[in-house]
Amino acid sequence: MTTQPRIHQMRKIAGIFLCLFAASVVADDNTPLDIERLRQEILNLKHKIERLEKSRIPLNRTLEQEIQAQDEFVSDAVRQEPVAPWSERVRLNALVEAEASYSDTPEGTDTDLVVSAVELGVDAQLNDWMNGHVLVLYEQDATDPPEIDEAIITIANLEHSPWSLALGLQYVPFGNYDSHMVSDPLTLEIGETRVTAAQLGFVKGEFHALLYSFKGDTDDGIRSVGINFGISREARGGSLGYTLEASWINNLANSNGLRDLIKHPGHLEKQVDSLGIAASLSLKHWKFIGEYLGAVSDFDALDLSFNGHGARPQASNLEGAYHFYLFDKDVFAALAWQHSWEALALELPEDRYLATLGMEIHPNVSLALEYAYDQDYSPSAGGSGKNSNIFTLQLAASF
Image 1 (spheres, rainbow, N blue to C red):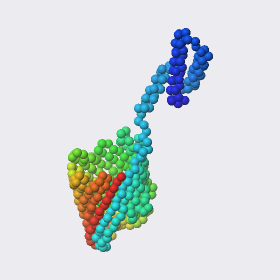
Image 2: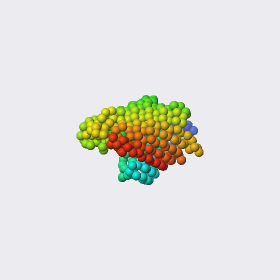
Image 3: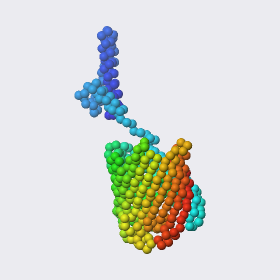
Image 4: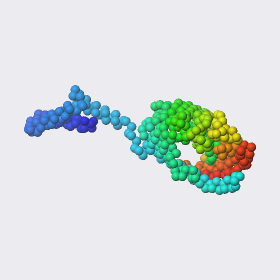
């Protein structure tokens, strides 16, 4: 028997008692009573009591105690937070980036206009502990048709536990790749790794630690592991903000940039670890970024070579940006110098110098102009020794 019918039964029984009480009052006034009707009411009351005896209501509780208990139950249910409808638990988001470019390279000059990225994301808070995330990505000339870029189930509730678990297709936390530039930093070109992984996380105050494992394209089973740990503090109200982070992965050959360059992915001659260190500092209008990422030893020349020996790809990024307001719009100007070592196989320049000017032209809409000056590796190292100039104008909108 459910709670709600019990409440109705109690109210009905109370009503019968009131009827009997009213009948006795009427009898005291010498008003004739309908004896047959009174007998019927008593019979109904008997039947109701019999049904109550078959229910879960303890018979040693009085009518008033039972009504009070039911009222307390209802009050507790009302005090509980209602479950939010799907419209409040599911969040849709999107990003569109369009780029126009002009390049002057040793191969000649060129202009282009592309949709550099379209992202469609869905985040669903299934309950207090579980979240589902799916991201669809389209990049013109790179991912056609669109593909599932991320698909993650996360178990976490930082209000109750510092631990979390993320399972699914994701970018593992190797490297930081923070930048103000339109183009990706050289560190990302070497280290970014997108795989199906299991990631265990711990967050306590400003400290975080992440441990993950997966089976990469060069692995025979789940053999790749990595860690990421650091401290971070957000800059607020002119206060100092900072990030200091270190990451390590035991097999750099599984990164997005290297996996297709390994000559025999299924028969890796040598497994090479990689280390990443990143730091940033924010104070008022200024932000400075520094990052290094690379292999800790040489690859076997049969896997990845550079200038006649095993390659040891590495990269760094140093960047500074100044934020200010112009016509009540958020504007930034940024400069960067990026350098790579033994990364000719990835078609990366040895040095890249960048300048970017960006502006928020409308809430969630930004416009940025980047100039990049690339210097290739010298002919003695297998490069051309020549330079390239690239201008890129990007319009981005998120919603």
